[in-house]
Length: 477
Image (cartoon, rainbow, N blue to C red):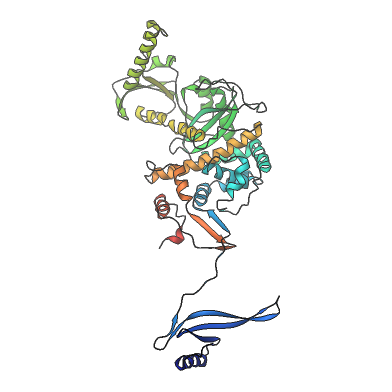
């Protein structure tokens, strides 16, 4: 060991006189280095060991010049996607208490499956691995092995009272609701409700009908029911509305539900209605299109209104629709699929829509209300394309019911996110899935139980601020 110079020895003595113990100065290549030295006991080796911590260099004029502190390497034990998990949990928060009460034994697994399908279509056998990649925000630790998830879907699918309670809570929020049907197909012989029925694609396969109730104002789904494929449109509405217990709402229906029995049923349940009559209805003769008119998406709409025994008849003529329909009928005549006499009989009602309602409102207001039925069509599109919930290999009715319910929850989460995008003026730039992909780039890194520093991309912070969720408040000044 090279002996230190006198000035360095005096500096060390002065430090010890001030009470700073365990300091040591070493000289190497004409440079003096300062260390803090201690002794530890190695229990297994039964001996002492000297441990030194480097503090810095010693200068005759400046004294101690502190060096960079060396830290022990950190062992990363987990990296989780936290941005998308926090976002979906925020969208889910109003439903969680209802879900927990309705399904006390299964709600954790239902929550996890709904979140996973909201992120991407996830088969049951991949659910556990995908869940491990995201942050368990509520520390639920759900059981996600495929067998248990299959049992969960069956239990939840058979618990119609639990589902109905959640639907009732959602329907409280909407005053004007849209009800419509779609279908999906199943080849399983064990799914008894998969029966041949009518569908727009004229596909002759066993199908399951899907009844969906949505808010006309915001497009948020309020209820879903899986029904046998052979059940006609009109028959579905009785059981669906009875199960949820709707009253004092405005229900918007499509022409497929038309019937005097349906109107009386709605009136008996104290439900207002907006429903178009079929083109061959005699009610067309009770109201004429007058001089009143308005514009709808740059299309000229003529209208008329008349009272009919406690109900109101609203007749509309869409001039553009009239031209399109007349052109299509002319093609059918040229192709020999329609006679000229049949065309003349249809001509009087080309481009016309007759809406029957118990609401006494200006015709334009009723027309705009009816046009809101596209909200439910949008949700069916998300159901089949984004969620891919119509693709199922489940083999029994109970599992189908559970699958439909869980997919409904995912649909609700995406609809709420789309609503936030619309409110923030971002819907033209981003889809709900696009936002979830962006937020997945915000990670949480842990070492054991210790949360390490994490970086949230600037784009994610900006989107979080614009959407008003405030998911990363600690990063804001």
